[in-house]
Length: 504
Image 1 (cartoon, one colour):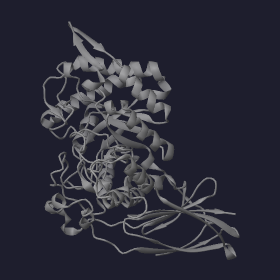
Image 2 (image 1 turned 135 degrees about the horizontal axis):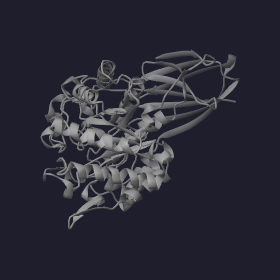
Image 3 (image 1 turned 60 degrees about the horizontal axis):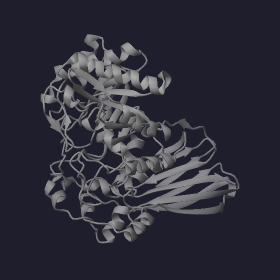
Image 4 (image 1 turned 30 degrees about the vertical axis):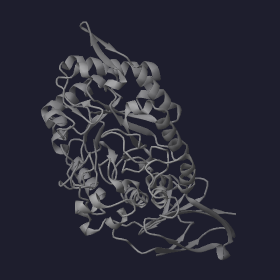
């Protein structure tokens, strides 16, 4: 790949929409010291603006109970979580759910931790709970701060595992009562939904999208943002990692986002904010691909190409401290996290770190590369080598039978890619910082496999893996005759390379 550009040309603005939001498991997990350490590391190195988690009203948060005919709220655990988040520069993207046990109309639950998925037994009491919650956070954090938050009504109600009977009429009642209650307190608070599940076989069609927008318009309901979860698989859920997912093509995110865009344009809400509040390579917390080097270039490639199609795309999730189907049995078990339980940075972590280093102006772009400029004049050149799944990888037996280290057999391996840069418009010399990721540089999963896949990581082993998880960094200072930089590098399959250039 030959890249020739003049750096004196004006750039086009770049919005870092991938840094708006990131996901977590359930809010109760955010009380744990190790989860907090993982989130703090993320915020130090590649900060996000918001975090979204399940289970705000779940029993382990102890926010609501009934005693002797009284309904009682307790916000102390919520305060501990929000106080910590705000102290490290990240705000809540609030998911309102699940149902407090004492307010639930039934006993159906989801996940190992048993989040109640039924409507309230008393709608007026649900409205009272929402009112108490909003008043509390405004009193504690101030109206100006809370106006910057988002309030999303429930999670994936189109699936009967998340909302009893996947009852659309009942969900619309939940949405209407919740949205009107919030807006009655302050009209500038931002509320939305329906947080619909992966599109599955309905390519480009968000579940409940058309119905939800039509119902909101008919009832004249407030809708500040639309949320959905565009996972690129043909089956939306595989909580136990049974291997029955199938992967769609490399353009699936773009196809789904464009389908949403077309839907909005034909609705009563053409300019509604688009927040896609869960996304990863699959919706399974037991997908071994999540641990592999694949995730780095997958994240870079998809986020770069989907620019302009959404206001945020929230990766699911920060940490493998995550218990939807119990904790994983091994250090690398296919969990969603950017970091594993021991705090080791996975390939997905590096993917977002690379994106965070891009500038605010795009000077050039092409097949698997981008050249941007930061406000201080530093150039950030990002190059990657994405390899998609093999056409026959959707045979679930391949995934189910693959041992650690054999997972790469699922992919159509591309040869190493050579990038030759010819960049005009520099000074007479330049400082180059080159940061590389591939299976041999920064892929802690591959280092763990080379170590023999220990199920229990000893302290000495952990020290080795911590060194292996870091990216390869080198610095060069070179003359640039005629104010032109000529430089060549090779990016391995699944690899990402960042070249940071500063004129001297």
